[in-house]
Length: 112
Ligand SMILES: [Zn+2]
Image: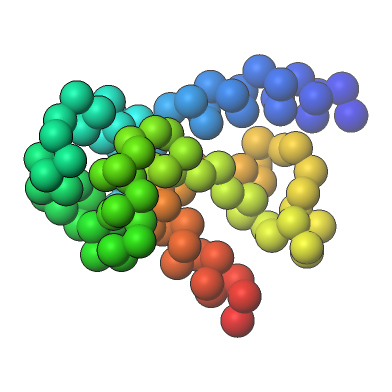
């Protein structure tokens, strides 16, 4: 019990802060947000299309991120085991960083 608490408390925020997608795309979402923030809306779109084609291919996600480049619009902390299947506990093994594109794909699959 105590060990779980320590792992959760100290390692999870570090991993989540990292902001790199753990799926195959390996998108560095944190870096992406930092890079596009100072750019104009048009340049942001161009940059996302180049650096994150996965995100750019979903217009809704592209618009959201280009209009408001913040961490929450670039990546999410995802429960590997969905909450409704008992994965809601705060455990490092059950958390991963996903870019918004991979997250929407995973969520769509889990709903099937
Ligand atoms: Zn991804």
